[in-house]
Length: 559
Image 1: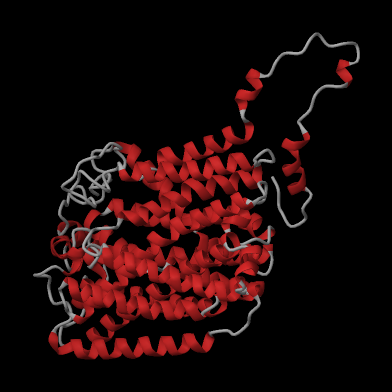
Image 2: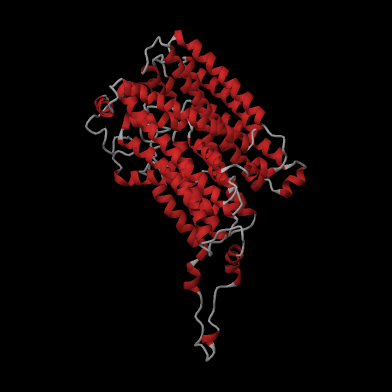
């Protein structure tokens, strides 16, 4: 979301006659959700029940909850708008997001077989020690905090849009109120309680998108071809609407920028810490595979509906009006909901309220899931058993305090930078997951020679590269959509660093583990004696012991 979404002069989407009914119904829905959430709160102090629901979630239930993890408010408002404004480029982003669960499906069996559920524990498969756990916690926090900022801000701006207050002060107030409510939810809910809300959100979200799409299709006599033609005609560039390159972030960068974006979206979405925690909540390896298969199907349907909603918004509202509200089209779903039915009809009020309720559920569950995963990492990886014993605080208490602290810090940062466009933080989080988590897990599962030095080089090298390249990219300076458009220290031409940072992370992991320079500098021995062929040197015990230890562990699926 940008602060332009509710800029002065933006249209009144609801109207004064319907606003009272929409706000009243929305507040009642929020109250019922919070009441339900508190009834799901657990008093159990068993850490495994708090973290992964005792690994007791049924496959179908967990699969629907996994699909719910993909339904976030950022996707609900940004993808239809991107498709409405940029056509093909928006569709390709939706397809990439849908493919991400397929990547996770390839690693799900190995992740579940380890019986570990934080990045620090997964990183310790072949590289034991506090340093690897700290690296996992650092990466988790660097991924989670930007995600929380974007989600909280999107929820606050959506609420301000519904009450018809186009001022920055109203946006900040709504963001703070939404953040406080969500902090209360995240502070009392465990994974099982969050899963129930996720499962309830999926059919509501799918029904809302399907209703909006069908009502839009009705305006074109149920003809998809007529709807698509109208979308092209009302777009800002009818001739290029269904061709790549219309999105400003990829224009003039050639295919390299597009490839980098694909890498970041596919790999980054698949390696989110809260998704890895969800996989660990499965009963066993077959249940994890089945849950992900169900999630893939439901997520595919969700993205298909998002794509049709984007085209419908372009056809009914028009790209010009959508772009006038927000340069990135993030008001498209509510604009479409307000236009598909007559302005004085009861059905219009119901539809807008339904979309608002879905947005609230999306913010509630997304923030709770991301915060819980980050808090579990803080509790398990940063605040180990020795630290907790020294300060005299139990593991559940540390978890609750970590949740509240993370939400408070994220909310404070969100309000501090509210007037700035921070969409690039989402791409930054995805870039970190793609560059630090994916290569580390691939090496940990498939290469017995991967060790502590290689992991630390990979993680901190990938983190440093992503940070530096993002700061030097068009997302931060030198362009009209940048964080600092008036500044120009744009030295890196790509919008996302994935094309450079992901291969570099793999290379750093290999260099740190294999240390090939030691082979080239090793002194040559004298001519071998008669028995030398029976005493050929092998790998040193210190170098091979981590791999041997992992291969013998029955809980780990090794390559």
